[in-house]
Each structure stands twice: as C-alpha cells, then as structure tokens.
Length: 61
Image (cartoon, rainbow, N blue to C red; front, side, top):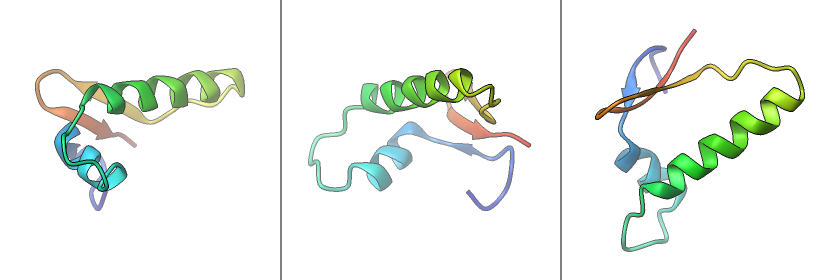
C-alpha cells in the first residue's frame, strides 16, 4: 500500500497473493487476515488492518 488508510479490494489482494490461481476465492483473504490477527493478538500486537464492508481492507495508521 502506498497510502495509509487507502482501501484495497479483496480482489486486488487476491491477485497479488494468489496470482497462480485462475479462479479468485475471496474467502482466502478473510482466512489469511483472521489468522494474522490471531497470531498478532497472541503476541500482544495491534494489527493495523481494518475491514471496510463492501470495499475491502484498509491498512490504518
């Protein structure tokens, strides 16, 4: 992300992370973020990612 608080669509994230897959499965993005949040929470770290309903994810400051 170039700008903080910029919303990135799940489709764009899927294209970057799973470029080898021909069919986009946006649930994968939800799973990856959920697992990342869980691991961060275990370490006492606040993950600066926010889900924006109907838009995607925002990387907040």
